[in-house]
Amino acid sequence: MKKLLYLLMIISLVSCCKGKNDGTIAENKDSIVVDSNNINVSILIDLSDRIDPNTNPNPTMEYYQRDTEYIKAIEKGFLNHIKSKRIITYDDQMQVFFNPEPSDPKMNELTKELKVSFNKETPRNYFDSVDKKYSELPLNIYQSAIKDGKYVGSDIWEFFKNKVKDYCIKDDRRNILFILTDGYMYHENTKFAEKKENSYKTSYLTTKLIRTNYLTTSAFKDSIEKNGYGFVKANENLSNVEVIVLGINPEKGNPFEEAVIKQYWENWFKEMKIKKYQIKSADLPSNLEPIILKAISGK
Image 1 (cartoon, rainbow, N blue to C red):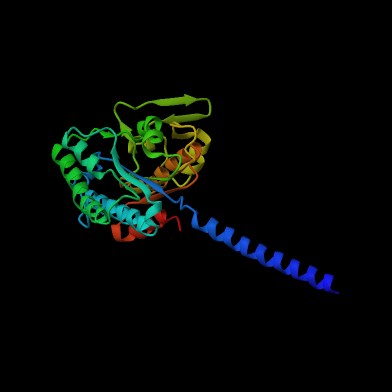
Image 2 (cartoon, one colour):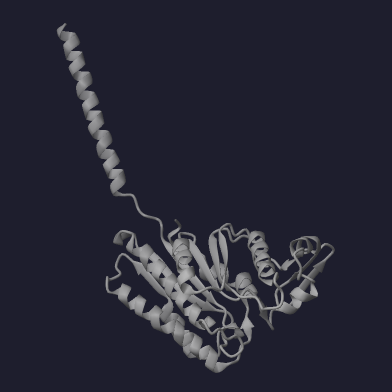
């Protein structure tokens, strides 16, 4: 009987110790968990004549003003994301790009100022500094481009071909690329077509091309599929970047033009294996801000 009681006491003691050890291990594991939800946000701005208030006026709110508010919303979402994390896990960055670069040499300095990064050593007052930069500098960029008046187009295709992987993608981040554009794609130095038996792909998209391809009726999807219309694939695998296009703004005259533009972009993204993307029409910033914030939060 004594032996039995002694054995039960040993078993009880071992079980108790085991429970304590398990709890300690679990606590240790929890204490070393590192938040890997770090983001790398890029903004590609189309500085073509779409932003010209004389060529493309909008009495409600000029398109360049909408852009600056979109950028402000992106910055807000970026800072909200960082503030939601523990300081020790800060390892996030945000930057602005153009392609090609505007002729104003000051643009380089502005983009340097707009490239911001946070790490565990970042002081709290840096949040205010970033907020101030993104409240003031983007407007300076647009005003400079409008004043210069030399709209050479925006070479978005070439950016995806040669720069997006180097500039916008980091292996240890959640990569998010915002593109501010009206959806048309054109640059004089990157204008070509690839015609094959069952397809006709181009590096550009203009109203003239849409009309030439007779994409002006409700049957445009069938025509795109049948003739293989679309953008030339610019890259092989961009599955580790999320893309949000803001500002699709078709020219008037073709009620299906906006849908055609979106179809071109959607097919292009799928071909380059971009898994997460959104393509949004030009709208007031107050309407698009919730979409922007949600895209950054990932919720």
